[in-house]
Length: 68
Image (cartoon, rainbow, N blue to C red; front, side):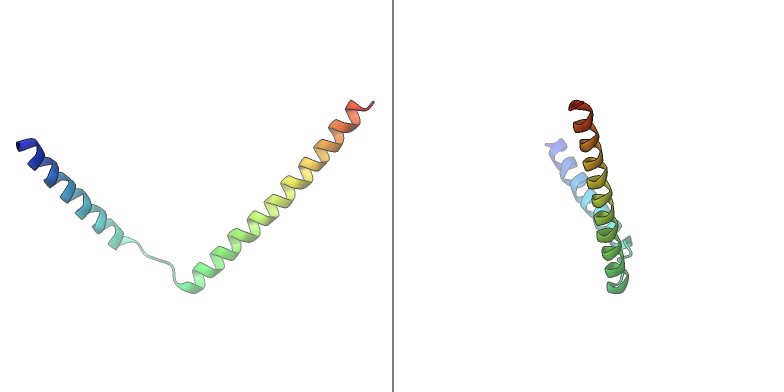
């Protein structure tokens, strides 16, 4: 019985610690969040295009070598 009581106390303190950590978070304002979201989307699209171009180039190179 003593262990179950100890578990309840440790879970309670864990959630209290978690709540305390969440209060320390500094959330970005809407303007900053919008800018960061746009930046992530733009970088993702650019990297996607770069990977697609490299993939097509490599595929054409492999096809050329196979058809020699």
